[in-house]
Image (tube, rainbow, N blue to C red):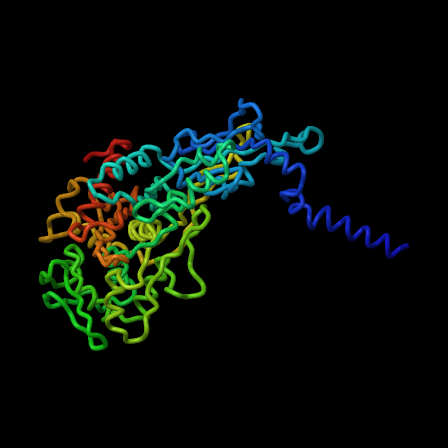
Length: 499
């Protein structure tokens, strides 16, 4: 009898304490099932209070839900908010903060609620860091690009806090299609995960965080940082002007774009984006140094079992990869130093590279949640900016900042981004035009631009833009540059800056 009584006590303790949280939130819990059936969820809003998602009481007869999820902005924020679906559950912010957004037991806010009047079960509201002005500007810039292929992504960050100011993926989708409980399961499936556009992308897999592309010459920012940060004896390295370089371990030849000669120190080579010069600089740095610098910026080693994932508060963020180089592999090292071979970056990662240089070498943790409030407006949680990585010393970052400024002005002849931005904006950028082989054998490029402004003083905005699968005849400056300019212009207009 005593043993049986002891077992009962042990089980009670197990259920009431050890398993209490799991049982409370279990989908098999009738109360949880009923709350899910009600579908009353908290609102998701932008930084200025613009409603991005809300629940409205349904008026349709026979509707199994008491509330229907509505996304007033349609596809504009779909890559961020995700969806709440009867058939597929949740994605995006809806998934990441589901425990707050769904109806749940509230914590007591005062002594009276603790002892007598328990607070009602209700959802919390999530306010994001996203700026609608920048989100709309980036979306419109993509829509107006003259490129035949308009898929791509824009990620805009506050480099000093890591706040995501805009995140646009093209193609996108309308989350209302998934939230509508009257849509048959098969139609919802065909609209989403099983539907790809002519470029092979689907809106429910956001390009900004879940797709990787060869970073091309934007990776020269990483290579330049490796010199100042880890191997300063190469700061004055001077590459003799040449059209191409050859390697002792390969019959490959690394040529400059357009078969033009280039050379000099980094002060000349970065603004002109000299491929053979930076390839040779990568060889001079060596495998351990360049690999370490790539890892310091958040790249994972290609093929490694453990991949570094940026700590963004969205699900399924992809790792960015740097080539798994063998010792003394000259050709592979040279191509990796210019962002080719197995180098692959998400737009988020390249925005973090730009933000790290802008912020004196410290990469802040990217985040979308600004604060969470309950139904009475009380703040439940506020995000605190947190450093994620230290990519470089302040001195090294400042030196690379100066190099990136010369890419966007006319102090160096043939700088790849000169005449795009007004000098008064004080921008620092780097272009990238990565060769992207296709199954058909047609040569294409993934076109990039990364950067930040102002480059003098405290940086306010960092950006990465990629437009993949472009004609071999265009460049990152031509395709991605105007998109960056439109976003910077929108920021200046909003903040009262001059341009």
